[in-house]
Length: 184
Image 1 (cartoon, rainbow, N blue to C red):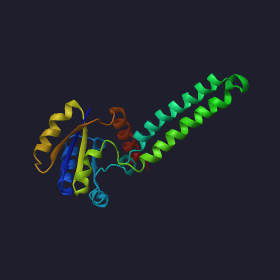
Image 2: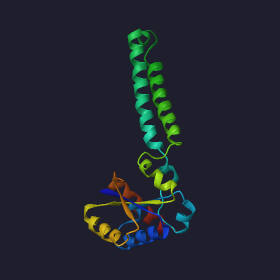
Image 3: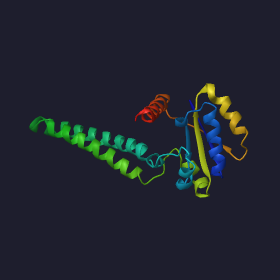
Image 4: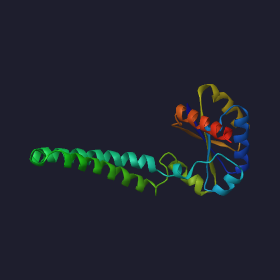
């Protein structure tokens, strides 16, 4: 899969593009709209990016986990080199290592709640200017359909490519949506 980004200044055009893609076989789970005008996007029933995904929680938590892993290893090494582990046992130091890993991961996530998602930082200027970022994750077989549909909408300008949502996660989201639509 491949992610294509587009920028547009009119949510009505974005809604039209989304509708055209969905009627041509692109699943709703593959389409996302990033906008600072959440109310208007919701009013048009666009598939907007969830508020948690607009923040850098996951990426920052991963970075925090790396720092936590380093701190945990340092605690274990210090316990071994000082001989404390031999005197009082490994259990307190293993517990300390687990606590350090958890703490740094948690702190990284908290820091990420105050930062825009690292994948979307390049669009901050456009978003502040009132524009909207439309992105779609496509498989190779869908590529020509997406390009054809977006070529018919000149107000949507290409803004690059990126890392897509994994195919298995898109399938899981689609199955969950079908399940909950079916459920009484």
